[in-house]
Image 1: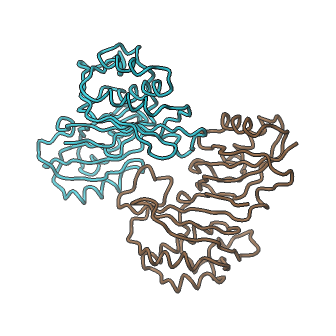
Image 2: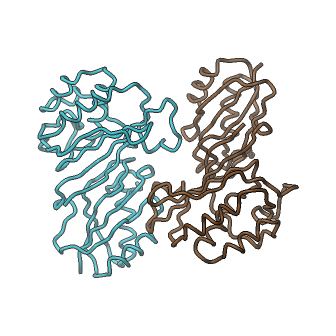
Image 3: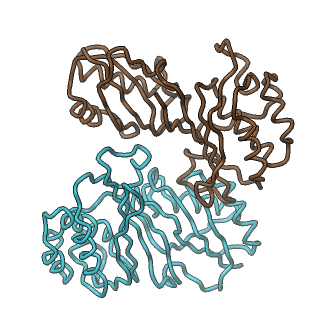
Length: 244
Length: 244
């Protein structure tokens, strides 16, 4: 028996998220199905970042234990069996007690906002179309405020399984990906459910001038969910890196 | 009554091509439906380049005549009514006898080949995954050979409505779009059906060394269809410009 670490990319559009759900198409179900067929026995995946329905990943990480195999052959076999909206980008054998969830030091997400006046059909499931004037300096002030240790209660649903709401943000910045795509990147030890999307939804209110930066800053110390802005749609969000 | 010219982008994945077909979802049907609802009477579109099922467009051009309206308001109304895989990028009033098909001086297409060893899920409907070593100089020699006036009989199905097979290629080149995407761009007065895809399929044979460049050149003078290579899949092809 050996333990493997996979790096996985998926287009989240046609999935009900990562985690198994009876009767729903999920990334975990698809991949565990392929692995179980390949090894001829049930294989369970441990994942670094459970993504919600419609959220994408360019470098999700998952681990599992199974019969020993050359990792390259394993990767080729997997890619021959996965549907076209999932790819296994790397496969490597790791220490037997490696756990993709608990060993992760940080997760990094990217949120893509399309600012064109007419939406690009090729971005329809891959970015949040937001054709309103945005003040870049205001967005950047929000990103700067987010960095550090804060209580993010205001940025996750009140109906929650989380028991503590403080997270350490290691990096947060806005950048211009292309003429029409503005992107927010954020890295933290861990995230609360929907946290990146609620942060983006609230930052966009600051960017359009509907909310002042001082108000945004005051939300970072355990304010109530109702105080913050809307949750931006899943289609703009990508899990882009997990660090170990 | 006035005549309008529209520039249109669409993701061809979920369409059976541009042209109307009973019971099939096509771009022409969707757009004519929207225009007819908007003007309260049947509106017919004349298009510059009839694209096949699965082929995309970033700048298709179509014209129509209808009741006079401010073009900006027309564009906004259209974009409020079209499905998310079609966008109207520009709308302008043109001379009354303008015809998007007959007035076009040239069409330009781009074909995207993904060369990564593992396919990117985000490119699955938008590029042709071809993970084999390609000789760039061989591809470039093919592109150079294509420029000029040739008989392209070898690059269109034998079951054809075309009556003459000579076309004038104004530009043809390969370029590296990104680390993993190689793109072929070609501009001509007009194209035969499937011509760009048959050219790409045959050039890729030269690029992998399965066919020599001299053989490719000999196909450009009215050779039979069976002499050339396979038709590359529709998903890599984009109509990117029409010049008037």
